[in-house]
Length: 201
Image (cartoon, rainbow, N blue to C red; front, side):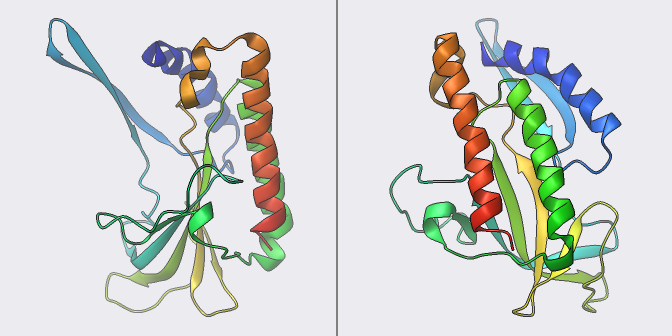
């Protein structure tokens, strides 16, 4: 089942995070088992909040972009519950990281190589755009140790949150043949190559 897959993957994942301090992979805060009854259990994984900066700064009115690399369904408007969350199909926006672009691409390629070697599919690059402010409401576009903050050409900040949804198995790929699993893994890696090429500049 998917819970067993997550548990088997976590040791390698946490080891990779500890050995690669500059990784863009999301931090895991906890994995919990919740029992609804003796017949039904749920597993909940808690991840680092993509819009969190640090204890003295916050992101003001962020727009969240979930870049999955390619067309994955019909073009849908943002939901009423999450009006500022956009997918690839919702927006053609590009993100300028200028002098940080080369190192950023290398970090993404390294992370995707690890995910590919561990058979992961369906992950996405989350980018948050808006203004980082201090708790006293003063604007603060400076970089922070936990996140990459880059002032964009349009005057706001592109805030690269990281690579999320690395623990899911899209469309039941756990039960596919090894050949089809390999194809799905390759497709996810190719999608990220497309993101790097088309959306980051």
